[in-house]
Image (cartoon, rainbow, N blue to C red; front, side, top):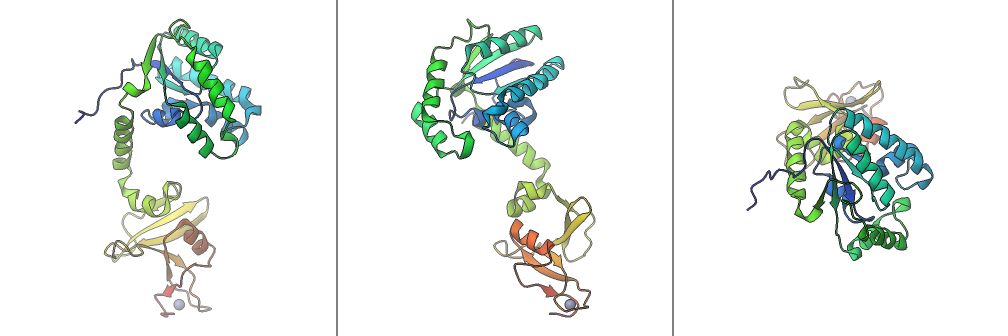
Length: 278
Ligand SMILES: [Zn+2]
């Protein structure tokens, strides 16, 4: 059994370039680093164009990426650039930049079989799927790369890295920090959990209570601690169906769609009023 955590073989600080064609698993590999350490060309394109694959904004995206990278190198922070790096002048540029800032540069080479890269690329949708020949072209270009001759200090083969173990340990540490929100995340997803706070202390001695909120709007929920774990655990506060009854009425919620409907006052499920029992 491997003895985790096996340390990653990178000097601190360093500039790490991932080298692999579209679909080779660069973004997966980058999950072993903290998200703020990873600068992805696709992320920057998405920030510029609401679209990860929109090549029209590539130059703006790269300019923004370089600005952030320089700021990080200035602070001596290890940074990963998640991009294909098929072009030699791009690799040389980053090698020179690392040198200017006095940090070690690494090329992490992914040697994912081309049929896997093709299959992953084919499974993508919209503009993030590139034409088949592009994957082949990138792979061919990368086969002729010689990172050391281009000024990159060290070359690491991706398959020698404890990538999954490191990523899982990092995610596990995050999970411990946010364990309080585990039930909210499990039922409604990570995005909804970012809108949620538990009441401390609970507003009801029988239930754990909390609130989804953003801006001036909120939706109050309660959690049935002792409910059958396979049954509905959350209920949301909604208006009573009887005109003039101030409630409170509660409706089961088991999805974000149910939260949205409850928030609009049109619950997907029946509600039950604690005051008038309707
Ligand atoms: Zn009522």
